[in-house]
Length: 150
Ligand code: DQA
Picture 1 (tube, helix red, strand yellow):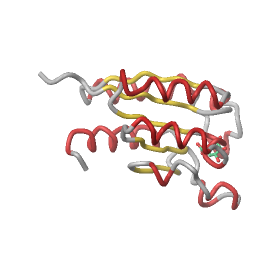
Picture 2 (cartoon, helix red, strand yellow):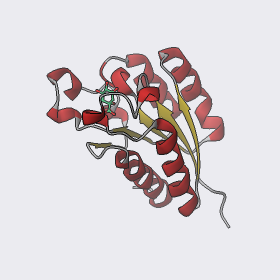
Picture 3 (spheres, helix red, strand yellow):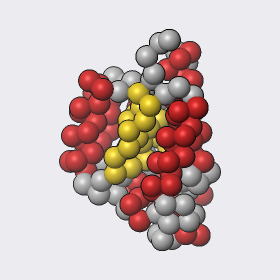
């Protein structure tokens, strides 16, 4: 049996409020429920996930910098930092790990400022618009890419 693939799941600012936060846009599923769904999907795929949420850019950068020693890939919803953070993008790029960017909402169907992502150009793939399912779809894509190389 090969070692299980290990995925770091990162949630950016305000995602701790999921469930109560603008439910018409983000749905009513809470962050712990999303993490549970990811855990179950990973288990079924023979992989492992560890999840971390922070409202602080530097805390996310710290976790990203530590990732290469412990993980094979990163699944991230950078929240509002998607549209603002060169620091997150640089940290993700520096890991050399495949990164999949996910969003609950379809950021392209919302305000103009949400259409630009600093992360997308260095991501292996992007999933948005499927609510909590964006995370599960993103995980599936990331594991497939790690197994098949594309
Ligand atoms: C989000 C979209 C971002 O524009 C927003 O700032 C978020 C959530 C999403 O998952 O749809 O916090 O990343």
